[in-house]
Image (cartoon, rainbow, N blue to C red):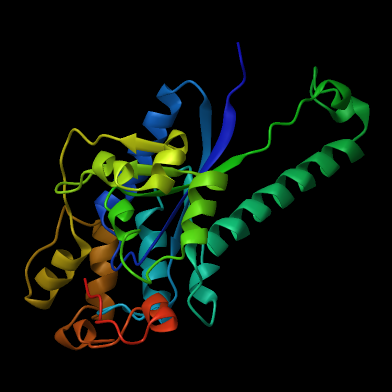
Length: 270
């Protein structure tokens, strides 16, 4: 039986707040990739964006990281990583992918060095280094299918970044209501060229939970139970995070990528 390629799923975003649907994306993607018979998903990484992204209503990364960690306490394969959120300035998605790919290679090298230094009697049977054929892990960007549409937004993405993402890493896109990923691919010569590295995952149980709608409900004092984990609801209540004031944060400001590339465009809000 041919060995499967180890694969890591990375999701970048605001997670403001984390919802059940954010976590559901990982489960759907893992099932789909396993069913291809080619991959073995070994890890999921959730990477919240830094505060410098300047998105309207974006609360402190400290809170977004804490809520994500609470939500993922029951997961045995998805973790929250704070590296991106800890950067002083907004970091392009392609750089986040490079960082985590390099980290995965360093981790693999450390394991190999550890095994090489162990005495032969300490190694499991059949674990001869000479017979091992190390398969390098792959890293793919996990997202909602609507991300493909944002590739067309002027100044939001660099063309060379999109090319590196789809050519070197790959995309795993989960369907969302109102999005037509096949059309987005067909309308782009670049995405069409690398469509073999874009995995479209169909969510048959539609559950369009929106973080924006969650925040709106919280501001109005409405229940969001069963939309986000109870632990996250408790954290939000304890810290009084989402208010009318927090929703006005960065209001009228530009997203950082738009500001850096063309300061004359209009703000892109939720």
